[in-house]
Image (cartoon, rainbow, N blue to C red; front, side, top):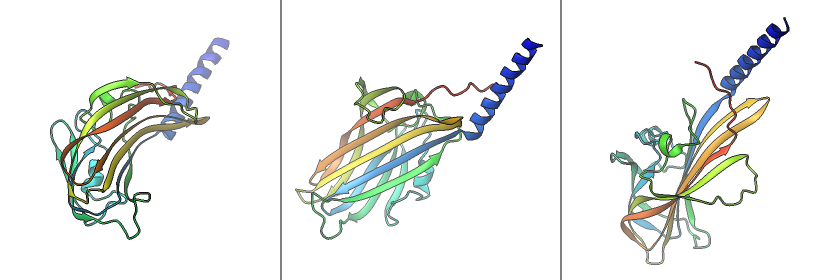
Length: 235
């Protein structure tokens, strides 16, 4: 009887934990892109990397197609391209004009953002192989992670890489333009207390004066952030 009671208790606990985990589980992608300038840009064409997995699946393409990106100006023309190796979004606009009073110390910032639910658990341990990144990922190198004052749990691993961006616009010779995009994939759940794991990746480029052509963007990736003791779900 004691053995039977222990067995039933263990099974009941496992079923309860699995049910609570599945009920509370949420997997989301958060995307931002900032375009910063301290001068007017004319005849603007940009090809920006869009995060996608190695098979070309992207959590953000539907939002770009529907113009459902917070902060995306309605008069911008947006077209998606799949190059076979990467997913890009082509943005064209006659001009990006900062408001009066814009100075280098206080530039004009356009912030694009979106948050998307994932219909499956995001692989935050192996995002290079299985999740969305700004591709193509080239010259990937593991590096030391910077100190984290938040003392996040887990054993994060950090990397540097490069990718490409196309920019074509006219601007004064002293214009400063910065473009940066960030993607975070996060799983969160609650079994007695909130827990989560995630990865983040950022690409960025600073340009001076007018620009006509492809440039290399610097990228960073931090994976395996957080907790990885979620229950194994039986099939």
